[in-house]
Length: 174
Image 1 (cartoon, rainbow, N blue to C red):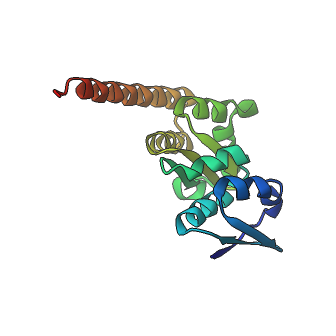
Image 2: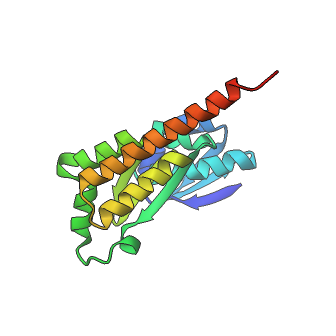
Image 3: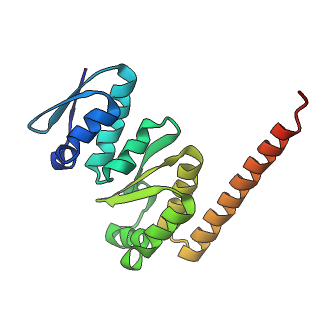
């Protein structure tokens, strides 16, 4: 059993029956505290899902965290940038009408949420590493086009490595 505090409890209450069913745990909400009962592994997954819901990810995205391949990463903008005006840094990450954020999500295959002075990322390990590096570059002042090029090169390298591994697997002698 685990008990956690969830600041934005409404995000959880809106999908609580779906969470119970898909996660296979018992969930009880009292005030802003959620009590989770069930198997330890399922409790661990549920805590990760609840944290993702709390920062604003939709339920279907948060539920990806049940798959051990998926990570939930938090980046503190303050810890990366020395700039005083963090609003400008957040604006660079979001871009005009959200274009920069959407482009990074699209190229990196990750889901991003920006809240206060934090960026939250959900994706596979390789994708999260690439998205994190791209966001670091963007926060440090790199042009968006350079960041997109970096992500595209990383994706190509990753796909090439997967292709090589598949080729090696096909060359094995039975």
